[in-house]
Amino acid sequence: MFPVGTPALERCQYAVLTHPQYTAALVLDIDRPSHESGGQVTNLHSKVHTVLDRLAVAGYGPAWLGINPLNGKAQAIWLIDPVYAGEGRSSPNTRLLTIATTELNQLLGGDLAFSHRFSRWPLHKSSDPTAYRWHCQHNQIVRLTDLVAEVRRMTNTQTPGRGEGEKQYPSGRDRIEAARKATAEAKMLRELAEQLPETAQIAPAAAGVIDGVRVMWISTGRAARDETAFRHALATAHRLKKAGEALKDAKLIDAYERGYNVAQAVGGDGREPDMPPMRDRLTMARRVRGYVTAGVTNPTTRTGGATRMSSAGRKALATLGRRGGQRAAERWKDPESEYAQQQRANLSSANALRSYSTDEHKGQLLALISNYRRQGLEVPTTRELARELGLSLRRTQELRKALGLPGRRGRPPLSTKSAKP
Image (cartoon, rainbow, N blue to C red):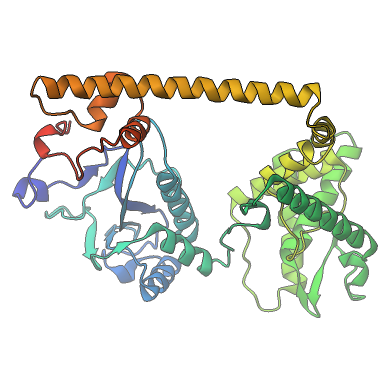
């Protein structure tokens, strides 16, 4: 550990990111060499330089760029709003940081295996010819949400929003009706999709089988490369299953690549090959195996206007909206039935028990505060009272409010805070 600004700190080439519950920087290891020496920003790989330039124009470029003077690899550091998590746990903000890191890695060709423990130190100064050359771009702090939105805009990836099934409903009946509506809409779209012709049937006459691959066309001379490759991999998987062969990843990926290359050769339309990365091809192989196992031969994509039902909607439809809800509605038709009377009695008993517990806790809290005041001592803070009574902080605050004994406003003085480790 060295004080900031000392010569000893400037000689350090690496920093250790040691705090697992607090992060104020997003660090990327861009493992895409340009094989150019010099250590300047212009020595970066051309694609990396283009992407970083677009990010900088939009106001989301990294604060620091460190360039390897030998091969053009780099490390990029963004200053972000600090994210926190409890000890041994995660939080929504730390999960958002993971999403931002993953999507930036995919955009810039970063090292997905970077452990985020040892990082290059941007304030390093020495005569080491192999040390990274650091360039300070700005000192702005970036919001993770805005950064992720910009990355997805650049990659044409739609940002997930709150769907129809995730909204809050005023009652359970409204949720059930929304789930039924979504189910009916999905059924209608599925029936419509079965009546529509497949892509191969409406393709032009030139869309025959070329070298064993049925090429799908977007327009004359322009092939749907990804669609062609995926359908060729699916057809290959069905043939392998029929022959009793194992659906290995390598075989499915080879079929996908062959379909893509054939579509590129006959319908590239001046486009450069843009084969998905290996990670996406492995995901494709898992999808194809799932379709083959389920017997799907013509997977169709969801129509853009269709309502996506959430897990809560499906659960409401499966329980309240069907047999369980119908059975419960029958039981409550007669409010004087034995079932209804028993349920009301159980509810009254539970409410009475909660009331007795509240009265007991109020008495304990009032006695404790009175004991401190009788001895002339300062009343403890709400947190200390909660610890002594074995209650939660929220519960103790509610009890103090109900008794008309609010705690002191503002933060406790520094002398009462626990020392940082």
